Image: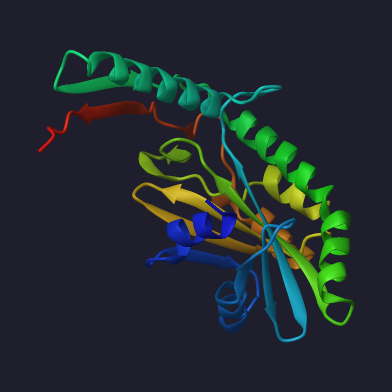
Length: 244
């Protein structure tokens, strides 16, 4: 599935919540989303007025991350493979099979920040190549600005428990904002998160005024004790369909 289809299905195909942290106008946001087209390196282009907005999509989570990649993805792939093997084996003698498993939770707050930083920087390094690619296809007549769509794909979402209230962890803490502030190569960032029972977006312009105001807001600061994720359980089901 293309990056654009992933974003569209989760965040744009139905009513979703978007929180805007900048002075960007609603009209500008609508143009940005309504003109998105699939591209390759970067993933998406939105062309309107006299500019090209290049959008690179990436995923991160709060699980351990090693040379082999995200521990969450490794566990998901292993469980999927084991479930398929068990279903295929047991369906030889049974009419239906139900299998259960559980993903071991290895997430914490520092890994959330570290994983974001690692993947963010790897995509920042690609911007010169992306710019040249766009110029080759579209010339030099339009202004080019870069945005990221960063999606937290932690299983069941990343949450914050404070004063007895559970809610989604908003990626607006000083650790994240400091990373953005160092890299004005990007004009803005859109965060995609799972907020309890829905997907939502946070739209941030990467300018000093916006980032400084966010850093002053105590509501966005989170401690290790407040950080919370859930233990995902998986289930697989298969049944034989009799031949007519």
